[in-house]
Amino acid sequence: MIYLKEDKTPLNAVIFDLGNVLLDYNPKRFMLEMGIAPEHTERLLQIFPQSEEWQQLDMGVISDDEFLTSALRKEPSLRREIIRYHKHWYDYFKAIPENVAAFYQVKEAGAKTYILSNFQETCFRVMQEHNIFFEDFDGRVISYECKLRKPQPEIYELLISRYQLDSAHSVFIDDMEVNIQAAKAAGLQTIHLPIGGFVMDYLEIVN
Image (cartoon, rainbow, N blue to C red; front, side, top):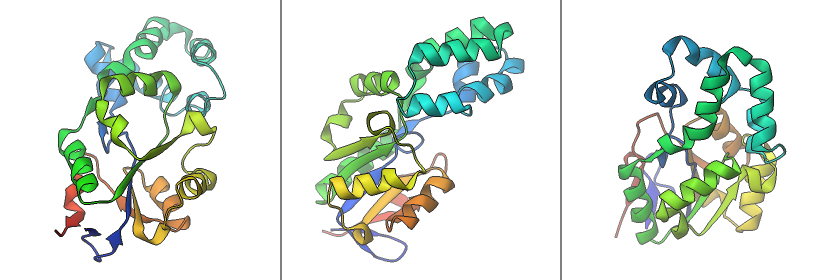
């Protein structure tokens, strides 16, 4: 059986975000590793993780080409950098081995496992190809597939209803406080995982 360490709540389901929970995600570092000049990163961050169009891409309501056209219109002087990042950013995602191992420990302890994540279609498909552990989840709700995005309440409600979860005994793990607060409002247990944090520091398995 698996429990929350904090208050010993027994858990039937563990719900994982992807970025900074199971996959290392750091756009600024990705840019620098690509060779993009440091003086350009702040302007690029306004386009990629933070823009309204990026959120629309997450929700699957615009295409990659539409996003790229918008980004180039906003920052034409950064055309080369925008194209480079847009083409290659998902190649820099790496699995976090300790937390992937934790995912399998959770499964072995008998809990159901799910993904709840904001992800764009192209990137998610690449991640599926690169990370075979995606196939071992019991279910998923991904933003581009359902046209919803965390922290919208409806995306949590969809997960709970689709998989008939007992919210009081299901925990959602995410690195962003706003997403954690929305999960709490939906009745889920939560773990706010700090960047670089390890999932098993918050869970306890009793055989």
